Image: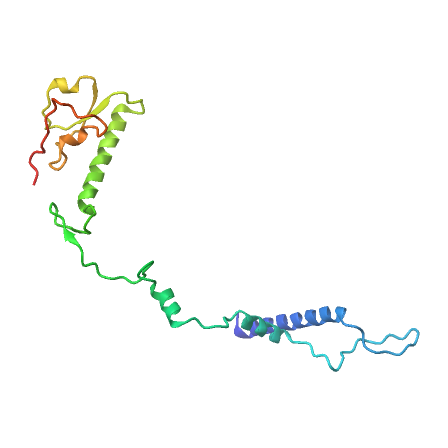
Length: 200
């Protein structure tokens, strides 16, 4: 569509809009003065003291009404742009309190777990849960579940009354067998502390 056709359509639309507004205003205004003669109709004439606003004027007034009257202060403008350090700060700043992990050497924030080491724990836990679901299906688990790796050496009496899930790979060095003891179980007097082996 060329620019001339677009301008022609816009001008015709504005003209139609002005005509519709004028016809609407004529319905509510009183008719002009006329002679009291029977059978003589006086066409409507605009009063000299009344001027009707054009569509362009109405459109400009509507646009100006949406403009903010008061300008925001410099403090509010800077807060909207950069945020507030006490609440929500939008600027990106360099962290200077990072520390290196003693196991893998990656950096992490103090007081938080190393994301690289924790990703290994998540992957190993997912493999264990998938193996348990594959072996035990969706049956209710009424006995303790023991996860057994290839290089685990445990006496046969340890598995009495328990369900065994075998992992087809050696136990990772960082995964201690003492982690399999339930935290809600009361400590046994005869139990010996299991120390992790081959840890870095």
